[in-house]
Image (cartoon, rainbow, N blue to C red; front, side, top):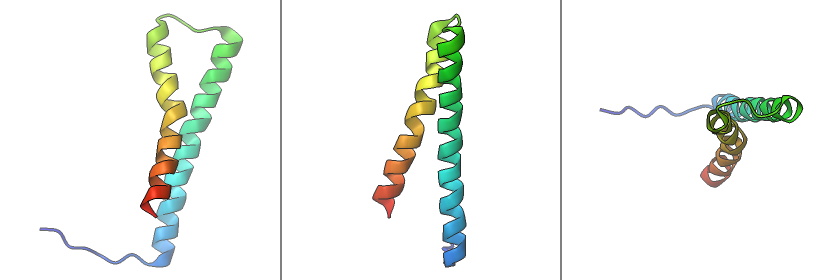
Length: 71
């Protein structure tokens, strides 16, 4: 059974800000990893590190598009 609760404007703003802050944090982590790889080189096993890097750089864009479409 689902009970829907109406959100106030301030609650919506807080949720949007947390959502976007999460996206910025993820993107920042990806940029930091990219800078580290550029400076130190790509460590072994390469596939694992690229497996961390790609989602960190792509996910914030997916989140932004999903947020934009959902409005």
